[in-house]
Amino acid sequence: MRALPTSLRLAVALLLLEAVGVALVAVVFGYDGLTQRAPSAGGAISVVAVPALLAAVLGLLGVQLARCRGWARGPAVALELLLAPLGYYMVIGGAPWLGVPAIAAALACTVLLLAPGTRAALGIH
Image 1 (cartoon, one colour):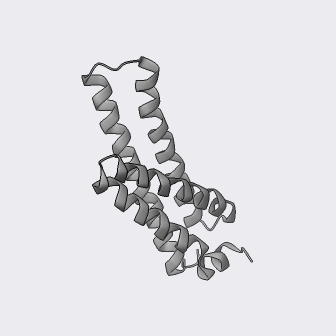
Image 2 (cartoon, one colour):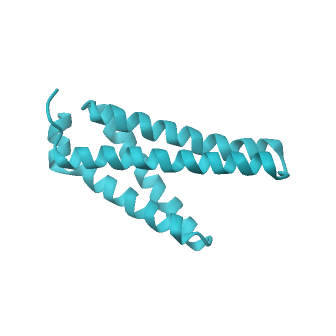
């Protein structure tokens, strides 16, 4: 196995860190759903299921990029570009301590995934 360029290694690390962070959010929401009365069961389940699915996808993409699978770059960039606006809404919704790092990580990971070293390692011209 060849060594990954720094840009790809950092992008993979950020993707995996984001996956862990989103998984923790799913756990917290799950705990809240079990300990508090929810307006609807479907809403409570979706609030846990969506972050859990997102965490799984981020983790899968991180692993595939670590294995130099070029197909994973496009979905990873798309997810990162979707996470930045979510971070913005966290900031204006009263959770800047979550939103600002989410925006920073999303933008940094996008830049790293678009870097020439990452493209070369993934065989994308």
